[in-house]
Amino acid sequence: MASHFSGVLQLTDLDDFITPSQECVKPVKVEKKSGKSVAKIKIEDDGSYFQVNQDGGLQKLEKAKITLNDCLACSGCITSAESVLITQQSHEELYRVLNLNKTGSQQKVVVVSVSPQSRASLAARFNLSITDTARRLTTFFKNLGVHHVFDTTFSRNFSLLESQREFVERFHRQAEDKKALPLLASSCPGWICYAEKTHGDFIIPYISTTKSPQQVMGSLVKDYFANQQNVSPEQIYHLTVMPCYDKKLEASRPDFTITESQTREVDCVITSGEVLKMLEQERLSLADVEPSPLDSLFSSVCGEEILGHSGSSSGGYLEHVFIHAARELFGEEVKKIAYKTLKNRDFQEVTLVKDGVVVLRFAAAYGFRNIQNLVQKLKRGKSQYHFVEVMACPSGCLNGGGQLRASESESNKDLLQRVEELYRTVPAEVPEENTAISELYNTWLESVGSERARKLLHTQYHAVEKMSSGLTIKW
Image 1 (cartoon, one colour):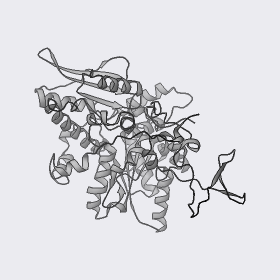
Image 2: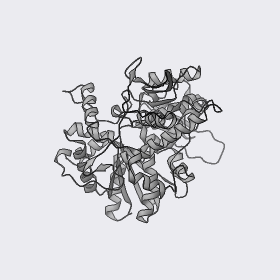
Image 3: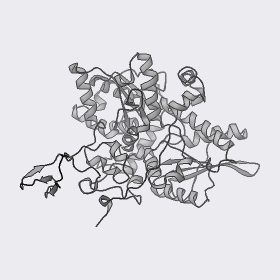
Image 4: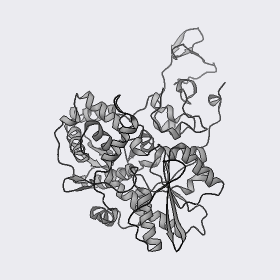
């Protein structure tokens, strides 16, 4: 079965893509009983498990549910998560919550945050503009019972600004800290899982601690928004729409659970493709849905038009950090970025030359092959880069595994080009000039660089030890 997770999680030496029924660490649930008898387990041809009792009778065993947390805790089967019972990470879970609200069994404030990459994918499918797609999605979700529809372009402003500041701080301490640079972007969860599991303690110090836009939005919704609405974080159900299945893994990380209320910053992640399934389930075409005004809170708009960011379609981290660093560190105003393609189109380089000397060298490395080469150069001490925008998917987030696939009449390449063109039709905003972001820094976060900002906008990473057990042996 083909996996929707990013290739970087499937192609490593961990051999992640396995059959759960054969090798998962939690294949069945066995009731423990007192006594010294040894239970025998029989596996039928259809994969069912039976316990053989002392009298020879058979008792069918219940399969244990595997959550994404279970998969993240194990170094053996992360990409098999989609083929077992994943709970709390599907559009069916959103329907369940909405139905409970309708029946009065519970009352939660339901918030949906949509990524710009997912919006572009849906816009291409239904031949709509980006803004029109956003307005029609707002109607679609609110008609289902969703209360608020936000835009993760807004939260990406925080991710970009924090990445800029983190780079400048690391640049200043590179003399005393040999692992301060290169700073490796951290918004791609497929790359983070690969780094933690395959290279662990060696690579983690290089990775940016800045949260991704998804998780920054989680902080905004479950902290700031919850206080504004005078509700507790657990009374909010927060769902995001993302271009990538790996984002489900990110939302499930224990680091993104609010300890005090034991609730996740992001309760559920669905992909662009799952939104299409929901439209089909409702027997709707997005083109036929009436547009609604966009929510003003946590949305990047100018008048009635959606805004975006300059740079790559994976967030623009390289461009924003490069321009900021050139100005802050060397007094250079960079008006236009000149990309140089190296071994392949998914590995590009940008340099700043001052007085004939290269003072900044940045790169964008997309896809497993380029990531592997980057890490190997780091291990050999031969990397010349100060910053690298790392993404697990070839061509970046617009080509994520959760995006809508091409129809029979169109090639994947042509579809990707159309999605890219649509993505770039929106005007770009400058994070430093966003007054709403500045106000939130001064009020919600107390100040730029505060301890509260550190707590809500940054995270940490953990090396995952490889498991050694009989379950991982291939005969």
